[in-house]
Image (cartoon, rainbow, N blue to C red; front, top):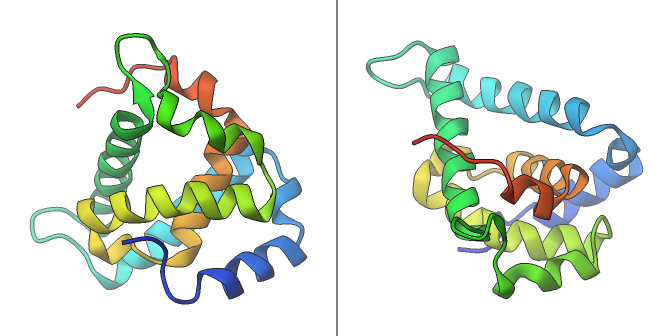
Length: 139
């Protein structure tokens, strides 16, 4: 599925605002806030917006982890090691976002918005893709 239609404009705004220079925890906080905004508009049937948002983000992170990481070796899959070459450049963010966007759209289409895809990509790149793959995610 790639990235949302307004992806390039959103990435440009985020870059100009200096958000790419922030620490990973601050980027993750931004991701949570944007997700809460989506949750406030489209809440799950059995959960409140906050629970639905956290559940959705967890499922997305789990699916991204399964896609990017070799679960046995606890490292980034060979297919994605090229993502490390571009890191926090716009090309690197775009490349990772293309992978993540399809996963987000499959897990929860309501979250397929540029800011969520970008913040998740930036958070992962800042955290370190290889380091993130050493962490086990519970289902």
